[in-house]
Length: 142
Image 1 (cartoon, rainbow, N blue to C red):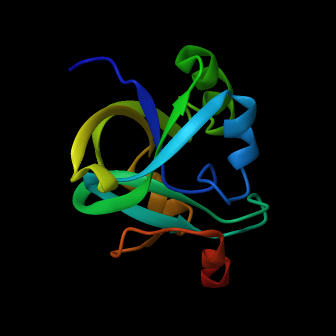
Image 2 (tube, rainbow, N blue to C red):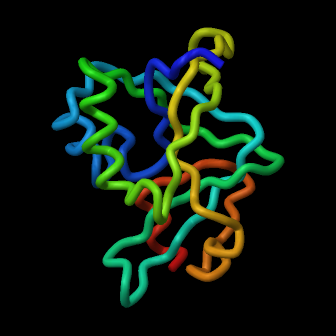
């Protein structure tokens, strides 16, 4: 697989969401609406150890909607994003293909942050979102 050229985001890093400022600090240049195939999206509710709700994806049947973000320096951006996503512990950064919605589904090699495991997702009370869309308004779910 070719090296990823961008990052697919599906939750708090999307434009208009709580952590988009982290993308800006990481050198965000632009975003395009996109989706992933072969992933399932989950809502992880707020709890005593999580000050706010956020999503996670796992491999599985389904489509997840979000956006592809390009950065001035991808390696530098990944350093900041890895910290936010607790890469290597809560999430694993994984290469995959996103499909650009406004370009007729044109493929784009991206990094995506995948939750550590289905068992871990169950442990945090993750709720499957079959429609594959997450936003801050999901807070009402938990």
